[in-house]
Amino acid sequence: MEDESRYDHITQGEIINMAKKSKQMRAALEKIDSTKAYSVEEAVALAQETNFAKFDATVEVSYNLNIDVKKADQQIRGAMVLPNGTGKTQRVLVFARGAKAEEAKAAGADFVGGEELIPKIQNENWFEFDVVVATPDMMGVVGRLGRVLGPKGLMPNPKAGTVTMDVTKAIQEIKAGKIEYRLDKANIIHVPVGKASFTEEQLTENFNALMDAIIKVKPAAVKGAYLKTVTLTSTMGPGVKVNPTKLTSANA
Image 1 (cartoon, one colour):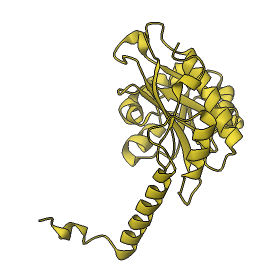
Image 2 (image 1 turned 45 degrees about the horizontal axis):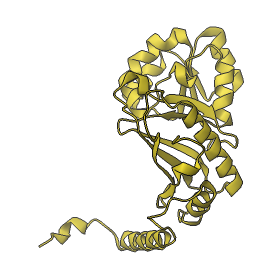
Image 3 (image 1 turned 180 degrees about the vertical axis):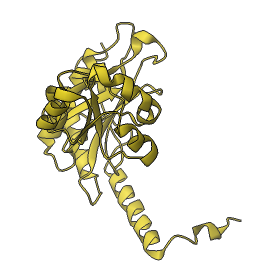
Image 4 (image 1 turned 90 degrees about the vertical axis):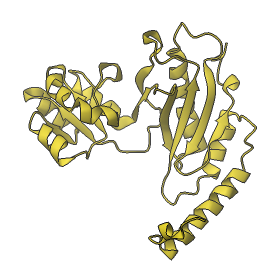
């Protein structure tokens, strides 16, 4: 028999709230045919329609790729600026010295510093930033934070344009809606393409721009279908499958 005491800490209000969410999720799921893969336009409309969050939810796309991530020539990582941005204001931390530090401040960086930030991040668990940019000469300093920044996906990387001498360009692109995409260990890429408050046209345009970028970085060694599944979802909503055969000639 189940021990009901483990639910004692849950208040009546929380129980009602969970029941409401469960009911909302069931209602959302009823609007989606789980056996069908939709066109981009249909998927975007459904992702917005089935979003029941009380906040402006993030709309995200997940690509499950036919790739062997263990092979060096099949690693995928890059960055791009979405046509309509992400709908989120990114907080930028820049590691730089001297003139480059002043340039970063002038360009709109939220935080600028050097070695003095290491104990603040390591010991005080300070993470009031979303993206880290560093000049090449500061990577020796930033490298000491690898174990902390790496797992959070915050480590600067030349491929993402976050290790650069052109800190002004890096900051401007991030503030304009630059996103990074990277294949994880399960051969999946998760990327935000906007907010539920965006118009269908804005989300579709962002999705298509990202799709073009993902297609362009298809490794030459991939045989057969490149895209296994593509799913669009909002923060608390159900996933909506997108028909990969309708997303350009990706599977050719």
